[in-house]
Length: 543
Image 1 (tube, one colour):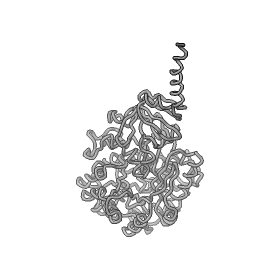
Image 2 (cartoon, one colour):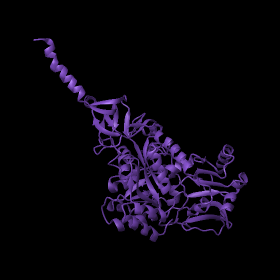
Image 3 (spheres, helix red, strand yellow):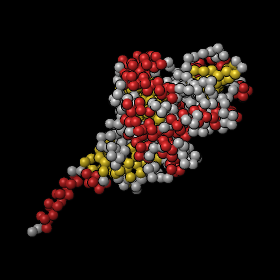
Image 4 (tube, one colour):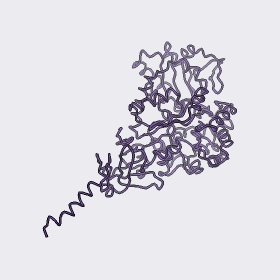
């Protein structure tokens, strides 16, 4: 028989096999892929088409089934779902990038020196603004007073936000412009006095007395701030963030930047609480685009522990004359949560102190009654009484926490709370047990943007210097699998987006990150040194 005749069936089979391969945009092979799916499976290849994962599995199988426009052999590098920060201040990060950086200043004098350098660089600014100071890092751990600030800057108003965003330090020029005196008051806030006069420190709601006279950036400025913030975020592996408290105008700005394809990062926007915002969005209802979701409101029950604005059930151990305060009264908090319960919106309430947590857990429980899928959240859940933990599970309330808060506050938390009460603080494992999930964010720019810092803090309970030896309150450390889920699939779940992203699975949006080492196996002291090699959103490389 003619040899050509014999070869025809073989050739036809080969041609048929080639032509039957499905088209795709990207094929990634030879990778160590932590899918973060329901079985926490590990794969070595995936396929992307039209911005979504369409197949995940063995490279040999996927190579035979798909023909991709681009292929990438990663040489065994680790790949993870795009990191998701469920509690951040995205616009706030952009604003901070244009202000004096006071993070890590180890004394009042160092703060002043940084301000002088910044002023030389911005001599024409109408206000001198900055953020990041923390008196707990100084030799004298009390709030500063304005005398040195006045001497250094007598002619320009100065406004410096504390690291937690819950206290403002200003000079006399700023106080005069805002017409703030010893008699000025605002419910849910405090003007710190000495000898009957303002010291320059305003806590929580009292900060509004100053903020209302500081020139605000316009929408064009805010657009530039958002784009600058995105560069930082994607360079650190973040593909989705949740902006904890922004206005309708800012939400519309983000939407327009998405639609013009200038902004790539995904945003789960929490609407700032306020009567105009409630009226606007409760009538409009939740909405979602490919990159923006609006279906939650951000509430504030109390302030921060570092500035003693957190509301405690018993007085502060290091300042027994105060127990902090609520930023909104119980009746107002109940009214607002009832409005949200009667809508389709999620309630996400900032609660630091055990009194604030106790109040909001009970208000939530009164409405939710039992297990549910409303996914209402307590943001921070920082200090929780022993007899309140069970309420998270009973009412399906999600704890949205920030692991780096534990390793930032551990130096002075016991002084504030005492040795018994502090055991209910930063209790991530105990919180996780209630619903078998937890959401890990950063609260940036209050803390560093890098999500891997939070991963390290959660599993090792240590700071950047790997202190303390053995970890801080290690009974509440979490395992690495849970920590990764908390910053991917569980974070997406906390934002009603787990059907869209948070894991590497067919049908999900192709958001992923490639690291220079495997955070699931690397020694704990090396975790914070991990670098992002690539960040992808919707199958597009953005870093």
